[in-house]
Length: 423
Ligand SMILES: [Zn+2]
Image (cartoon, rainbow, N blue to C red; front, side, top):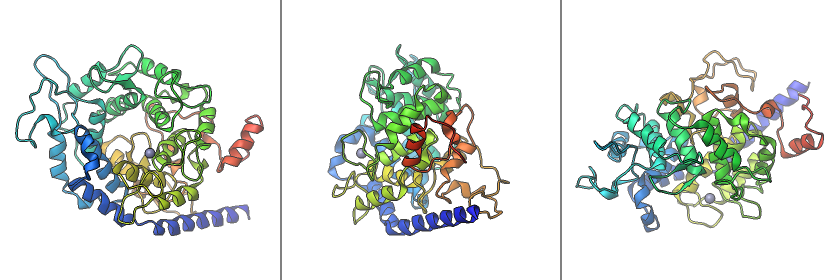
């Protein structure tokens, strides 16, 4: 009887999410990303040195929507490789620059400025772009790119964006991601203990994590910290993971806010939704409320804004879709929350293992093989799969096996002295 009721609930929830997905204008968002890859509004002028990032949001958005077929992938791959900084005879490291602003193949003159150098965030976005577009990274100078990452770590354990550039948690994440992407899963190119110590020292009294020690807890810095710890294989060393989960789930008002007393913002459905998933608490979000907030932030001609009434931009459009994917919406590819790209791209690049072809479905009681279906979203609770198939070096916190489905259940558990929940 109980099993029948649970099955009915699951079907009802799936039908509800599917009906809600039909209310979003997904095809208009694909057109928005395609349009932004061709021509950008003048407000993007200031991002000229970070063009790779804009391309990343557009291509990644199309990947989540399952519309990469609309792209001229070889042309974009060639453009990305044109941003690669090759090592000099003097021993300068490699990586990628953010765009052709210093010259290069797509600028009509050679990139020979003395200021030309790799940027750690641009290197991450370049590798993500290449993987999403099906490139095998064979033309990446891996040694030079890893040398760049290694050269940017300072004595605190943190990383700089470029030589002499700003240094904080964002670039710790980029370093861990690049090591993973370039086949250095144990991150032997960097000082893992120092990087982990930097992250742990950035956890505050409230359980949240800032961009560095003593800095305010924030949804963006929490994601970069948790994802970095996951990629470094040191997440179990986070001492107060339960308090961090508590901080994150209390940021949901309907959509998520980035900090206490701030308004909801669509991008935090990714920053905090992905953090909760990596912490084993993805099911605690109110998924219907996330969808309702995102639908209110849709622009009628495509794209999603930061909040209702705002013009859309590529960052919020992509992260809003990611938040919906994490929340279990139909019609969107599932995410590799560690790297901020689809599981499809991560699996094809070898950054996630191929799903087990013989596993039967435990959700719908149908004896079906879901090996390839694992590349796209099928069930609202599919977020659990990432935890059932941990990647090398990833060991989740002990409470990860709990069955909390709501914030109320979680708070009852905290109030009860954190006894093991009944299954
Ligand atoms: Zn935002």
